[in-house]
Image (cartoon, rainbow over all chains, first blue to last red; front, top):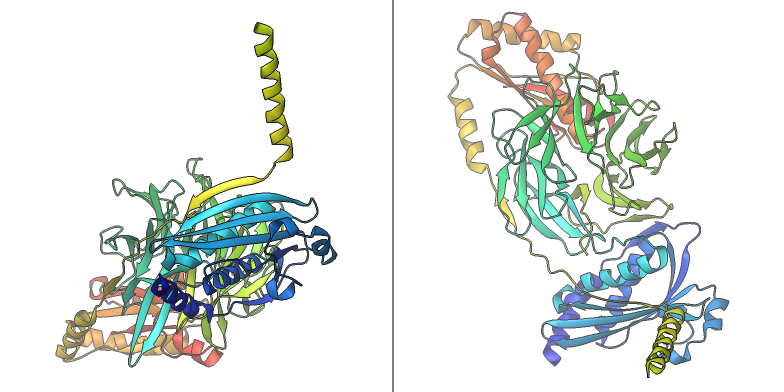
Amino acid sequence: MKKIILSLFLISNLYAELVLEITESSENPYKIAVHDFEGAGNLSKIISKVIKDDLLRTGEFNVLGSEDLLSSINDIEKINFKNYRLLGIDFILLGTVKIEDKINITVSYDIYDAVKEKKVRSSKVYGIPNKTRQLAHYVSDGVYEEITDLRGIASTKILYVNEIKARSRQVFKLMLSDSDGMNEQTLLSSDSPIISPTWSPDSQNVAYVSFETGMAKVFIQNIATGSRKIALENNYQISSPSFSPDGKYLSLTLYQDGNAEIYILDLSNKNLTRLTNHYSIDTESSWSPDGKKILFTSGRSGSPQLYEIDLLKFNSKPKRLTFDGNYNAKASYLPNNEGIIFVHRTGSEFQIALKYFNENFSRPLTQSRLDESPCISPNGNVIVYAIKDDEQGLLAGVTLSGAKFKLPASSGEVREPAWSGFLR
Amino acid sequence: MKKLVFNKNIVFFSFVLFVVSCSTTNVTEEAVYDSVVSSVEVSVQDNAVSASEEYSSKPIMANAVVYFDFDKYSLTSKSIQTLRSIVEVMNDNTDIEISISGHADERGTREYNLALGQRRGEAVRDYLMLNGISKKRISVKSFGEEYPLVKGSNEASWAKNRRAEIN
């Protein structure tokens, strides 16, 4: 038993060294007291830290840890709600970690409303010892949804491309990590560039573009088995894959007549349906959440702008969505279908912008110079995107409530993030 | 007797109401999903070797690089000068076939840059075809911003990366 606890401590301690950088937080956060969880020695401290970071990263919480609070609580009966209210605290989180045996670990937690002076949630999460961060993410998501009434995203995953210079050669990796950038795993390691990774709606498969055959080709790979196949066999360049919300179709850019045009591939019979037909560039397609529309970038006006095609109307003319700025590209819909996020150029700087359908202007969300590849969390609250920081590529995040953060940097360049669906 | 049962029911009903009104605590239990991830490795080192052998076996080559302005695929007068000499070499050596690869700088999105690189490659091909070179002797593909010639986020580097390479 002692041995188990020691090895848990070592594994978790490695993770604990990486620090999350919150650069700004939102204006009106909930204030929550997170007391260090009880039991299981240092492990409960690490779980508490992950939960606090998760809540901070949502941008909707002001988090007070045990170190900020006057006393630790051993007996729940003795909670003095008045003391918490004096600190402006709205909610109190208490929890216990219990290592059942080699393969089972349980976290129990309770959420108290300091104003109503009562317990609002009592939950248990069952996990396994070498996935303690994931266990903590489940707790964070439970807390988040109890308080905000929105589904949490701490337990979701992010896909991205990592370029590493190893001696004389470059290595391109398709990576999978937790939504906080930790627990990295390699899906594909290649000596050719990889771009445009994306998830299937059930989060079991990923599609991406690889140059390993000497030209751009779209591959579909199963995460669990690693089996991969080319999406469409032909002699042309293929890129920019996007799964339909029902997972039955893949929209892609095919260079069949040289120029970039968008097609829809029926994954069951490999039938292709052409969607665009214009002498200028058409690419970067993505599906609306209801699967009825396709958003894409087109150069038909003379500069890259965003357009939308209604799939239900036969031969419908693409509708232009962006008019401000001379570069609007790589867009995707908000999960609630109320707007789009995209790369927007103002002056000489590329930033991430948001445009609601009921507004006729774009709202810039970021301020650096070369921001690209925005992807939105499945609950629609957080955008992760690629930035160049000191000529180094890394991932940053911004919440719609205005909080900003950077994800811990791995070695080499990190770019092209793609957010999974809900996994919990 | 019947009356007594009825009363019992009322008592039970009010007890349930009491529980519901006093306890609005959410009680949940869940298990962490245990995901499996497999890692794949691909290498094209062997292909790369055969490609370079192919090049070295050619006695005469038509090699050149032409450059473009940002978000543009029109040929500059300097590019046209370069392409004229390519036309000459290809006219003198009718067995030469060329491959054009279009590239972009790091600014803008990767997929749009892939399409832009293709347009640049096609602009070069179109010029060669206009000057009598058969389409069959030319292949075009794009590498977008994925293979920069020069690293660095500044205009000098970007200018060198917005190019079409002829091999």
